[in-house]
Length: 388
Ligand code: NZQ
Ligand code: ZN
Image 1 (cartoon, rainbow, N blue to C red):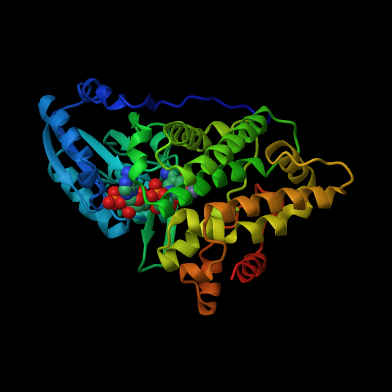
Image 2: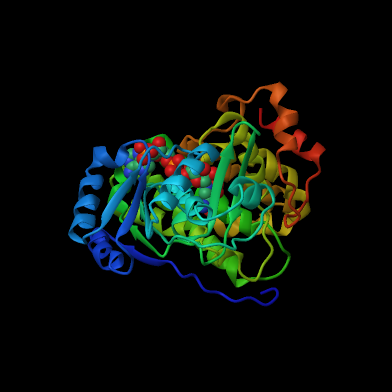
């Protein structure tokens, strides 16, 4: 384990089919004014909206609604939420939805009382919060991002063609999250598989880095095996509670800070994927899957030992008779077959990327240095071209 660290995740999780029973007790810890924020209507169709508004009423809350949070929430939507939260002196933001709604709630939470433009301060200048933070609670309906138990908040600025994530500290993480796997049964297949690959890639981003023997990597391998196994059940039988509950739990642990403890991390697939998202508004998980094979094949020679280990420990491939490079490639080929089974996007053209966008996408890609091969801008172009 590298370095010194303090580990504390303050988000209280309530998991299971009856998890919503805990919402009333959680609400009692906050003032009367609740901002209920949600997406484009899936919670109304599923009946969850009615259940939650009944609990809020029972708890005696004054509820203000902020619907219409879009996938990949925009900076304009952020400004709208800030005004509502501030004008109404909101005590708690309750986010009901997927990662977009939860990310959005955190962005409003830190921005409502910010005297500067939050896009400039938090996303372009990456500054810390130094103003009042409105607490956030979350009821998760779609699995993948880990937003329910982390400080991440990704906002898209279409005018500037930038999609940027700020990972805030533990004071911004949701105070509580309700995780009921049954809510995810209605997620469309395309979103479900995108979420599964998103969670898988969060693990990869934290696994493919470092040369040291590290307990955290062993946890990562277990989570990957569980996700692969459960995903194969869920694509055949989306209402299989056991599979959906395992996927939900694995995805939460994939990005709640645990897997970054005591080791270096990469995040370059996410940096490329976010820049693609800024140009195409494509589904987040698909922007990752579409560049992953080109990226991992590109960096594999620089991190051969870990890619060998990935083949054996995650995909169960026998090392017998294989050179290091053959074994590493066999692991990536197994991953590629699984991605095809899921049906995630395997090229960026189908996401709407055209040749004339490649330079701009490369310019918008942050270059990280924790992975096996810190990329140059030219490398990003090479990977994008190989992903067309
Ligand atoms: O808007 P509604 O009507 O609710 O529909 C949503 C949306 O269209 C639908 N959906 C969600 N739950 C459903 C459902 N449909 C039927 N039944 C349900 N139970 O699914 C669609 C996608 O939802 P969204 O929240 O956009 O998906 P996801 O959870 O993948 O979130 C994506 C956002 O999170 C960011 C992404 O960049 C993107 O902006 N990320 C946040 C991270 C973090 N906080 O750490 C990390 C990730 O890497 C990611 O970048
Ligand atoms: Zn992600």
